[in-house]
Image 1: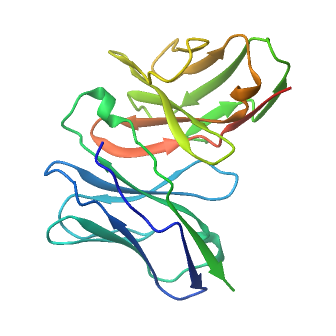
Image 2 (image 1 turned 180 degrees about the horizontal axis):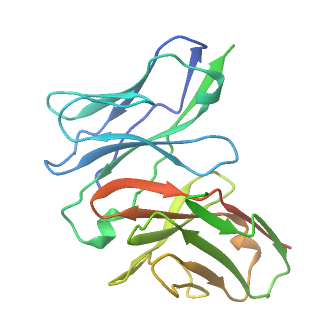
Amino acid sequence: DAKTTQPNSMESNEEEPVHLPCNHSTISGTDYIHWYRQLPSQGPEYVIHGLTSNVNNRMASLAIAEDRKSSTLILHRATLRDAAVYYCILRDPLMGAGSYQLTFGKGTKLSVIP
Amino acid sequence: DTAVSQTPKYLVTQMGNDKSIKCEQNLGHDTMYWYKQDSKKFLKIMFSYNNKELIINETVPNRFSPKSPDKAHLNLHINSLELGDSAVYFCASSQAVNYGYTFGSGTRLTVV
């Protein structure tokens, strides 16, 4: 699997936007960019995914660089409940069943300050 | 209704015992997974399984075995438990055409 690089930790003030960066310079043309988060004492939770175009959903926005070598997860207004570890993962759906396995890195631990 | 449910939530057992963790999903997904999260919080894939193919992470000891009685269930059997097996185990499911995974809430296994 192509690797991603994320900062170990970030802080944000409550109700302010948060931009979580991810570098994936070895991304292939068919890799989708996925984001998951894991709240304390819970299982990982799907946040968003995209291929080339920016994506929005009720949880977040995903901004993908034109060359696709980096992406940014945007939380528009951070709340205390957004404090979690955020994982950026590449996934190629065109490979065999094994490629559906999500490979988690260390992620970014987001702290939200009241 | 819980989409992916695991039982038990907590499991404390002695070394050498054999135990099982159950997982059920009601999402109609065709692929299920087991992940292990160790004390350092790294999440590692153990198995992925659909009705066609079992993919085993080569680093998983053969004391661990997945059992799937049907498409909605993937149980994890562990033989001869060791101290190093202590971790949180997560079950997950996905649909081939929907790339989002849904995870269970985890089973915290403690081997004493």
